[in-house]
Length: 261
Image 1 (cartoon, helix red, strand yellow):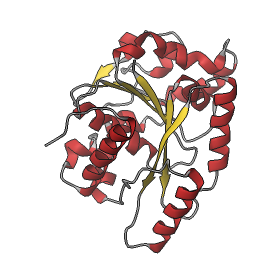
Image 2 (tube, helix red, strand yellow):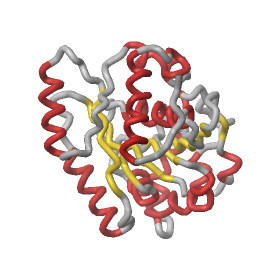
Image 3 (cartoon, one colour):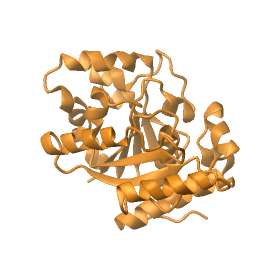
Image 4 (cartoon, one colour):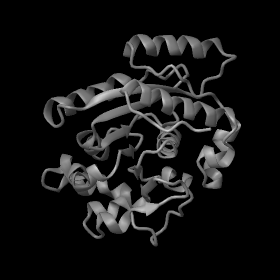
């Protein structure tokens, strides 16, 4: 059975989309069949994989509103084994429209139940807020991966995020768990980064991945070229870090994978 993973943090600019996109890519490169779902109305994950966010592209919004089928809205990407269910600005209205739907917290779960077994992983890039789309993502997911920036305000709001996950676990999805915490944008020259990492390690006690994602110009550039980091520059430190992170994730979960040369 496939595993659904939500990448979530209500703070923007923490590397959430970058982490979701590039872990999804490396999962696919390592032999797993992956569907990445862009649940952020900004559609950055969609454009990062080279898709133009316009009305010619079927989106998750149209699937939620039953205007298009799931099969009509899934696209193959440049990466073998990786498909995408895109997003666009229409999704910004979904949060309001979901309010009036029956069983509004389980709409996305019902969308993916029929195809869950067709993929090894379904990854969800959540919006940078704790709205109904995020609650839907948590309700549909087996696990959450939380990217956190190595900066002073990193822990701000984390208790709110964890409380949301606890409520979903108690009332909607008892099986959801934290698969791990990813420290992003780390500056190895900064003592502050080390201090923040120590604080986050205390807060999450054992859930933090050992692999940290460094600040890297190539990593920052790649979305503007519509390419994940492996395609844009597979030899840069950002690409190597996401490869190592994905390998660490598989080892932590006891999942066999194909090693990249």
